[in-house]
Figure 1: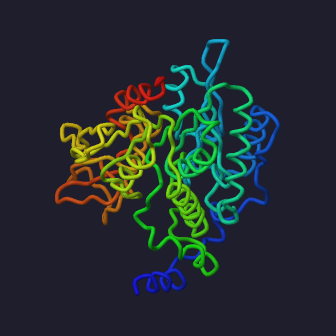
Figure 2: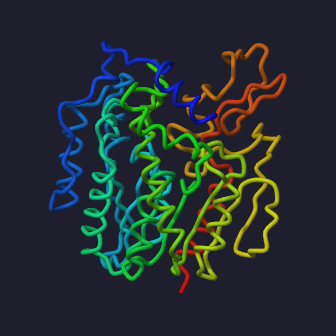
Length: 383
């Protein structure tokens, strides 16, 4: 019954797009992704973004840089290992700025891609098909594979679904996986299937016309939701029938509002079988018999942190945009009022936490970033 009620809400109550706001008007084209070299891909994507992005601030160069796919190389001449990083739904290549620097220190040739429909404006996800993302990821895996002996794949959220699906079917090609807040189990999985039907009736789940978040979209269409659902179905089917035997590093927050964290633990224990694989759990002590799981307490009252969010695991506290001292704060966090610094004590958390006398903005950095990288490197250096 609840599912039918949800469908009725989709049909009758979701907002219409603002036809005068360029955020909600799709671009006339999509960028190419199948260039013969990665350098051509980056250059052509940057030009396309410059011509099609709806800029949110006056610093257009920073916005372009933060959304353009990039490559970073270590200093040594003989580079033997590489990693392709794939971002999440609504996100950008800039989500991997901090992680990529650490991977380069570990000797990796690092490449990021910008999934089609991203980096420009939310309306550009209205007409994307899931198969396009699959082809894009495949193309750039093959490009990188031509240049390195040891190929790793990494991803955040929806991006983990795409790379894990490939890795499960092509284990002989892949040396290992880095999975940050993997999107294998959604908190909305009972409702997600209706986004496929609902997108024919209404366009948007929610809109934020005043967003200044240069790293991700803060408006979500039903088609975008359906794209995530398709990635979830695909990886779930492959995880049901397969196991991955190479080293895997996973991070997950107990209080993640987007995915079912306990389900991720079960998938890790059952499907990722390498003895040196590690799952880093941010929360209270995880009661598991799997000694490959390490817990770090996410309640840090001295830093006014109540718990960790879905996105916080990727970012250093010094990140230029999401960092502890940066100017940007994600105040839209499920509170029913606006933050008032005169009366509210500002804390940080996952989405939706509420307590009397406190205002919870989204935690957008990882207080354990160095510990995260150290454990990741242990997995990477597994022999």
